[in-house]
Image 1 (tube, rainbow, N blue to C red):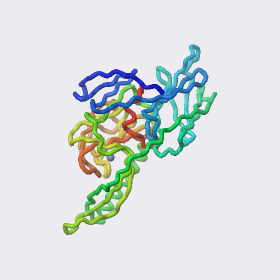
Image 2: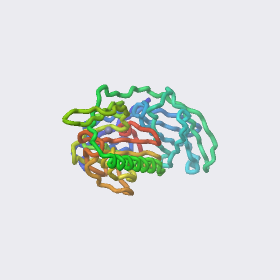
Image 3: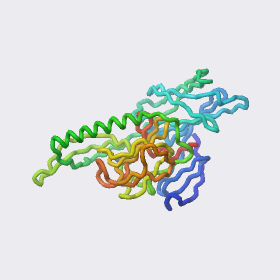
Image 4: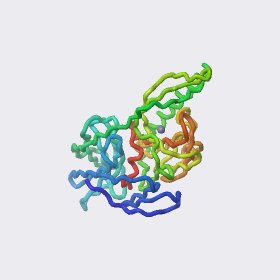
Length: 334
Ligand SMILES: [Zn+2]
């Protein structure tokens, strides 16, 4: 495993706080208080092809960036396609043609139990499989955080009629989310990434197990209602109402709406079933269908939906899996 050495320079077109890391060809905008971890990489050789897999730590939930290059002079690489099939979780991931070769992105699913990720690297010529071989890499079995305390949520009192309307709304929103998270587009992420805010402070970590307790006030007495556990599929970042929220990478807006749980809610499709989500906003500055770039101002921090206090809930979904949303920023994507 080899670590990168990039160089750093200050620029201020997004905000005075932003530092750009120019690392190979990747332009990364992150606040000065966000420490970018150097990536680790593993390379595999198969005939005259070389695949390199990059990840922050190869831990469960970490995003994986793959590149394939050919090192022969004579092979016409434009006739070829590449795909990998993960045997652990039965998923096929395709590669995209680029000037330098091929690339794609995926994730180590957080619920992966195996220590080894096995995959088949399949080479196709004019869409017909010509060769395949088995490869693997080791997963670092990280522990996920757990919140020992209980988070109390005030539950508004509704009439039967109001409850029915809310339930219908929640069902409808669930349907919309399922629909849009299945929209396929080719990978749109290019050599440009941006942190979603102008400074960095985590208030609730990704994949943290949390216990919630609903309560109501009746006759000035606190009445405790149902208790439930849930896993935090995003990361909560400190932010005050009205502060700018930026798109983390190039993509297309597929949800810009007010949802019951998510509040003012934006989802960006980055292609190859990769989606970034921004919740509890106070303002939305983009519409469905808008094409955004990394660093595009998409909205403002808020405290809408099921939220206690202003913050940004930022989330990345890859295929059906939740990914560690901060693990993308150290990757040398181009
Ligand atoms: Zn959250």
